[in-house]
Image 1 (cartoon, helix red, strand yellow):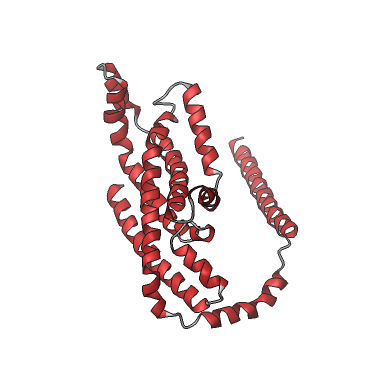
Image 2: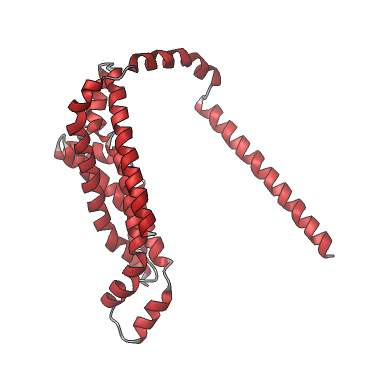
Length: 262
């Protein structure tokens, strides 16, 4: 009887896996058809891609010194934006956690705000802030801050909800108030994870800040847009190489810090 049950279970599992694969294939094929994806068009465009690469090489190495200042602006934008977003995310992460705030009237609206903010991409946020604040770094910093808030708050509140309830119950038993409960029961358990999320968001923001200049939000993106507009592809490659070096260094340092924290 047990053998028959095992065989039936395996058969159902194989059928389910087969149907899942068929569904994924049909989904990919249908998406390709509806979006007009054509492999032949890609093949026809390969010569143009080769021409573009030929115009990029060799890169204009003398342009490195010219774009160092906007690259530093891009890093500053990411640092400030991530910091501001991380600070704002802390109270929202606590307000969104059911094991900290047990009132649905509070944690559901807090989660809704986070979900709403995460639906808006950084580039759109920057495009909205530029007409209000003018061209420069401030719109980029605000766009990064809002975006970072959405990511960090979401990840942080999930970590808060997953903490060990033992210390919280012990503190409640000895009469600790809510502030003490949070500072000595919640914060020590999620600090390492929060810093990891902060660094992860910073890595993302370095890449994102590099293109915010397309909408006038300052940084290296403005120079990238200008060089592309004037077909200076050798300088475009210089900016790409510079950005790649910065991203690799920051990723390496960030990964080492996260390894120490976790």
